[in-house]
Amino acid sequence: MLRRRFLLKSVSIGSWVVALSACESGPLAQRQYSSTITVFAHEPAQKMAPTTAPPATIPAGMVYVPGGYTQIGAADGSAQEKPMFWVLVKPFLIDQHEVTVGQFRKFVQATGYKTEAEHFGNGGVLDETTKQWGLKDGANWQFPYGPEAGPAAPNQPVTQVSWNDAQAYAKWAGKRLPDEIEWEHAARNGRNTRTLYPAGDSLQVHGRFTANTWNGTFPDFDRQTDGFHYAAPVGSFGTSPLGLTDMAGNVWEWCANYKLTYANIMDSVAVANSPTTERAQRGGSFLCEPGWCHGYRVSGRAGSTSETALMHVGFRCVKDL
Image (cartoon, rainbow, N blue to C red; front, side, top):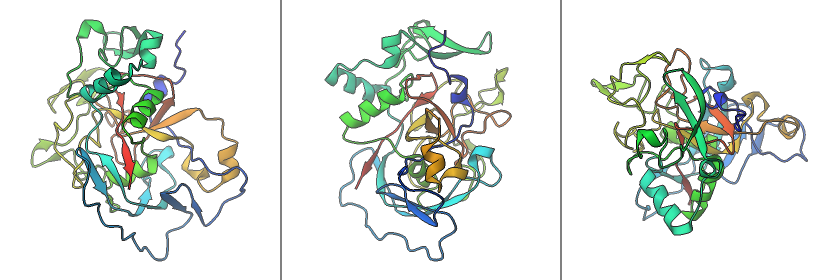
């Protein structure tokens, strides 16, 4: 029996949950969703961006995300990307790239931490012969595709880590996982860029690929025209205008929040009564192609249960100012 009930959902476009107070009821014009995010039922009449200046010193490997207003979602996306709504996000810091295998190893060496895939003895892997997902024995953060495929390189994004594992790393690093709204605000370059991807409306700029995705028809064939079949070393495809890498493709990234449909974002009763157990993921992966999963769009979404570990899901962290 598969221990991960939502294994296949983790590679589709999911829905989203916000943690609002259950003591409130009904839709509001605006709501203080968290200490860093305000959500609006309608477009704000005035959009005065926060004036917080970048810190004098930014930690190595992190990027400053300016605060401001962003419209979340997409009118032409999947049902889970609708309806669009406005948010005001306070500035924060975000990791320039996905947490790497090398970085995660330092965490394990310092703490003796054992991931959930290691506890269970297996992780979710796509069998390219049968074209089916299953649990492969020995698949973990060191051997994301299974022991026979060899170890992952230190500069590759760490995968086969559950949401719980990502939380543990973030706490050790003095950071946290981003909320889904923060993630999209950063992917929109902190200024509500309305393009399909962080770098524009095409995955190629001047003939150069800007993302690691599936180049062909999934799962039948991958032409690998972007140079990679599996996860690529972080930063292989350059940076977004904000200075971030791999915000489109490579591996899905865990976010802090549960997920629910956007239609319920202003309704605390719907949120409180939601039966979902899935955590949000963003960014798409090397397995995504538009014919079945356009998850590497800025507005693309997925999710899975907190204990699930998969070969194409990793994370990056954020830090409050």
